[in-house]
Length: 141
Image (cartoon, rainbow, N blue to C red; front, side, top):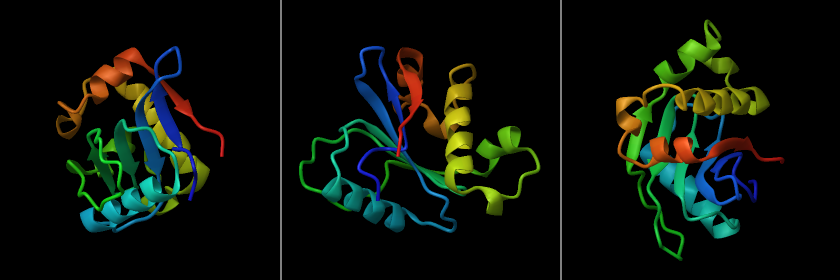
């Protein structure tokens, strides 16, 4: 488990706006995502920002929370991610979406969202504003 998010969206002065963790795990659930997020918060120093947990099948989103104690709070949004990868990955099989290649795909997807309208399920969370104000950055492992 990494001590830092895989991807962040940061302002020019380095302030984190969005933390993104990318996992190549399939067939996940809201309960799995909540437990994974709780473990991240318990074992790492993560900014209290908008948080996305991205898998090949789902995108889980939590709005910022001031909770200092880790909890298994369910995501504020849980979205089917299948259509998100089609345009960028083409005919690539979902089974191939893992590791650094999947992280690069998610980074490209977030960067592309700066130039297009957000999907319905991602509106109203602050992601659009963060993408306008910040830069998508991959974090070194």
